[in-house]
Image: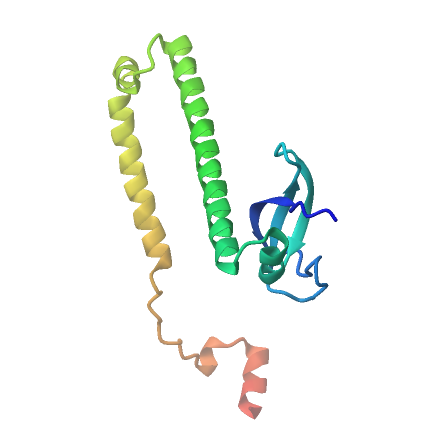
Length: 166
């Protein structure tokens, strides 16, 4: 009789698969994605279990499953944050290299001084203020004017006869 227990790593919760592979229960709010691993830690295949079945399959308590899910999701968030930071760092590095190649310096203030952009900035600030006033004026409710009363004399002659019957 083989009594070796399978080794699992929790990847997190998913609501895309809502049927437990172990018991077959359907329409769950979500399942725990667990990666079955060999003894060397290499992934064999993914399993999707309800929390109770995940605990049963791995030999853990449901509380341990919840703790591991939370840790896996936190690790995923941290990896995404690190990836975004690396992308931003690469973008900043490329921009600085472009400024250095084009202007001989990566200091934006020195570039603006060299190009005389201080007055242009003031001009753009004035334009931005003007546009903000225009947007505010467009968004303000229009003052309603009283409807103008038309008299019989204001109407064309052919309409005057129709107006008399109304």
